[in-house]
Length: 183
Figure 1 (cartoon, rainbow, N blue to C red):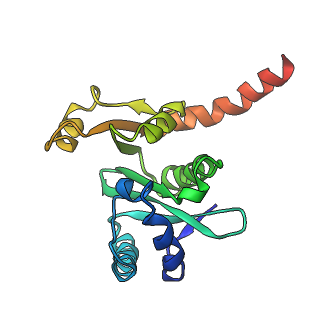
Figure 2: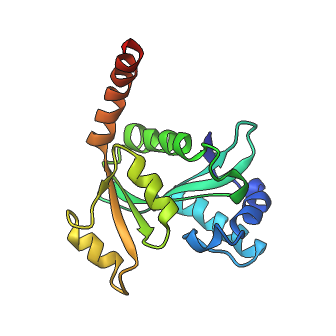
């Protein structure tokens, strides 16, 4: 479902990233294939330096369909950035990609908190985030981070995924499924 980034997937990912329904919401924008290739090289190097974590999202046939990243890593936390190509929207790829990435971040790389900044105009992403039982809207509980995100205007909502709440959800899920089967 996810794998480390490499340069061989750049053509496919660039073609998907520039779609007008995707491009406005991509954090690392590239305006040409060459720029995307350069940014991908920088991303791979930044991961080697511990500055970020970046993975390619794959479909069931192993084709690249988007990226999932943790940016601005500091104090065992960072900001999530995800995009999926338009042809793959609404097809169920987002949740398994996030589950695989969160598992790696929390249990293999020892992160404690994942933050998400979502543009207030990006209703689709806000609804997707708010469906997840381990996500907390953090505009009021993390005012310093919220204010920093919105220093240039009221642009973003802030969401937080704490490791303990995510872990609690993982342990609750099998019990909830068992109860539903018994009913």
